[in-house]
Amino acid sequence: MVSVIIPTFNRDQFLPKAIESVLGQTYADFELIIIDDGSTDKTRSTVTDFDDDRIAYSCQENKGVSAARNRGIEKAHSGLICFLDSDDYWLPKKLEKQSAFMEKHPNLLLSQTEEIWIRHGHRVNAMKKHMKYAGMIYEKCLPLCLVTPSSVMIRKGLFKDVGLFDEGLLACEDYDLWLRVASQFEIGLIKENLIVKHGGHADQLSRRIPHLDQFRIQALEKILKSNLLTEDQRRATIRELKHKCRIYGNGCMKRGKVAEGEKYRALIQKY
Image (tube, rainbow, N blue to C red; front, side):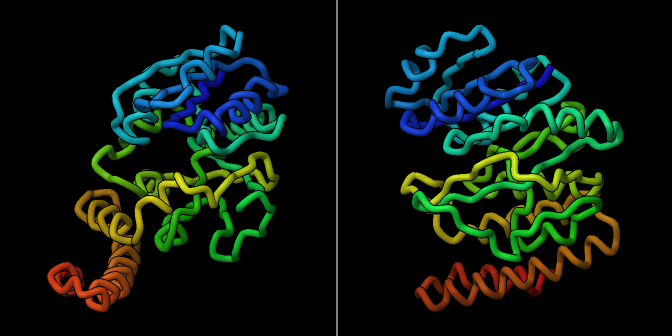
């Protein structure tokens, strides 16, 4: 059995397609856990309109996507966990092919798939910097997030090793988690498009919260303070931290945020 977790907040216009894509999987042995993060739209009725006893709906006060995913993990009964963002959807054989892949590679704790990108209703090609890799890919994950939450399948025990999503990060919480994973474990990749990832709509977190590098810098500094990194990984992390601090700090200065800019310049000197 696989536990599928959909965190959602005020996305009743997208949620039905996400749910339908799970219920339409060729692999039917799953539970679907929908965590409503305090929606004020028609999310509850949207979910209850689906008559399928594999669906479990839970509502919490608004705490953010990390808290919603973490609650889903706590409720999961399966040893295999998948996430699906409520504005994305899966192709029909996603669970079938990925569960077979995980069975074939029992030492892998996490795998992901390739994806189709839709922006403003049109299919677009991912840029080279978004290319996905397999294996020990920590250094490749430093510039930006290369693991897509909607594409992963994770052995639940992995969270005991690396922890859950950081509920203190307003954004880039996935980047933070995947750094912790990639620093220690191989990541598997199915080189086939098995999910459709939507972007460009107004309520996307990356559009509502500008300057995402400030949160990536937090994640980099956090992992530097951990005991997870090898010396090579630590050096690569410091290089990336300084690079991001330099760019973001200079941007702060140009916007007249001198105190904030000085903070990032001081962080460069710290390392």
